[in-house]
Amino acid sequence: MDSLITAAARALSAGDPLGALKRVALRDDPPALALRGIAMAQLGDFVRAKALLKAAGRGFGPRESVARARCVVAEAEIALVSRDLGWPARALAAARETLASHGDRTNAAHAGNLEARRLLLVGDLDGAEAALGSFDPTLLPAAGRTAYHLAEAGTAIRRLRTVPARDALALARAAAAKADIPGLASEVESAARTVAEPAARVISRGEQRLLRLDEVETLFASGTLVIDATRNVVRAGDTAIPLGSRPVLFALARALAEAWPGDVARAALIAQAFRGKEADESHRARLRVEIGRLRAALGAVAAITATKDGFALAPLGAVEVAVLTPPVEDARGPLLALLADGEAWASSALAIALGTSPRTVQRALETLATEGKAQSFGRGRALRWIAASIPGFPTTLLLPGPLPGD
Image (cartoon, rainbow, N blue to C red; front, side, top):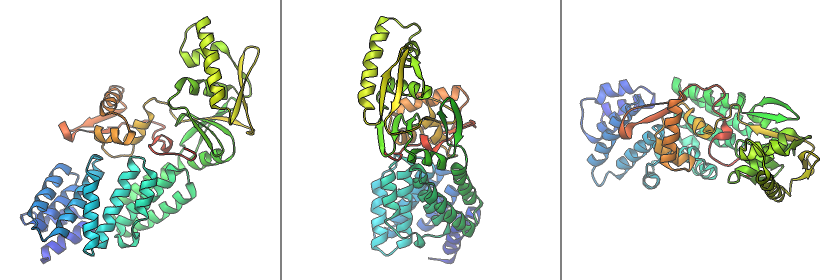
């Protein structure tokens, strides 16, 4: 490798893409194309960066498998940053194997780091943790270690493990200081704010207040019967009863929990669950059926008793009942929580992360744009979406992935 290529590579590792381009901007050999591609990616021109890296990969000969694998890893990083989650993960896995088999442990570890971060974005927390444990993070440069510890913190935050999350953030902050790249330091501080800022609102005994993540963790561990409106789950200790596919039952459970220890009138329950303007006999009959279904669903954690005017919730074993909601309730909360991470998302990537159809996501994005809550830029396949500033968002509880007991 000649001196200009070496100097350009060092400039890129130090976060100086312009310095790298000064050395290789006029060269068209494969190593220079690869470095130019990485430099363009650091400058934010992902379309040009991908084209340069593909050209570099084609330019390397059949015996230069390591160089081609490094180009694949660079393409995967661009796909991750540009939120192109449909990029083939198998290509990255094959490149990682090639690098490891040829002794390039640093870039193999970097490939593992990218895979872990991708899995975290789509909510596969078990897969992300397995990927993070599959390599030695000390092999990574300071910038890579920052990303590694941020992914560690991200999995811990999603699982509501605030102490490990803070420990990982401290390591990320130290690695970012060593890397001396302002953008990395800003990313670490942004992640740290998710632990310190309100993540949810709790309603109990007619009062409500905001909770930080550690307070949500304490609430879940307290044995309180929690009607969790962030995931449409009823929780009590280690027991979690999902009601996401049964919205009427969840609406009834929430109404009963918000009124606890009092009862809720039948007319109010009908209005809450069925959106009925006036309660007629058919509504009352359906309410009796749905209350019976709710009794069966919650039998392990609570009973539902009939009162003179309506129904009341009676927790079994728990001494308190609480309703947990996002700080700002919006039917498109999970979508807004993803958009508010500061990156520009493709609608296809949002569909992958949320586990829903691209058309559903596209309709939701168009509605958010009409309401001034999201905005787009670019055209065609380069179209990307970001969130407008919305007080109260994002909340980690709305991001994809299981919470304790799920």
